[in-house]
Length: 140
Image (cartoon, rainbow, N blue to C red; front, side):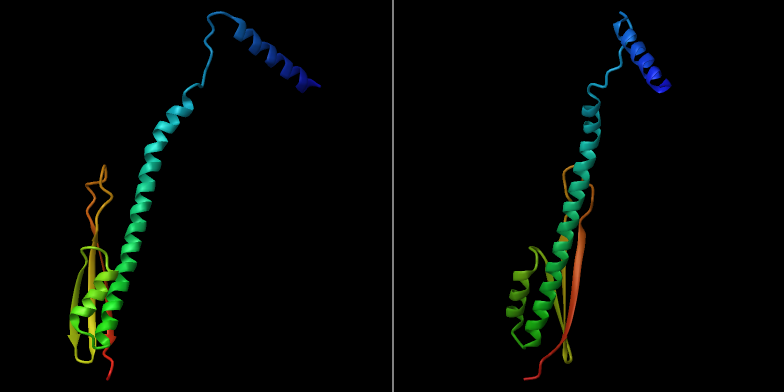
């Protein structure tokens, strides 16, 4: 039982030190608060970055869909205004749609800008997201 005797001695020594006046006691009060104060801004920045990346991915999908929809409508020999209207319904606000008709094919390019998250991250530039769709014209 030497381990038990050693534990008893350590326990008695701790009680003795606590009982002595003037002996500084070590407290960890507030340590969790300090750690949270350091970690919280980092967690907010990471969450904001993830939200911005999701917005970037959603915009990319919408741009691809707008290019395909416009090219498909033009391939069916719909008027350009109608095809652009269909593409604008799918595209993000402010997206630019350009159409190039080639012999037997149609090429559509859609470009949209995704602005940075803003706030503290206002220094980050916007990102241009683009997509191109090419399709053969249908024969009547």
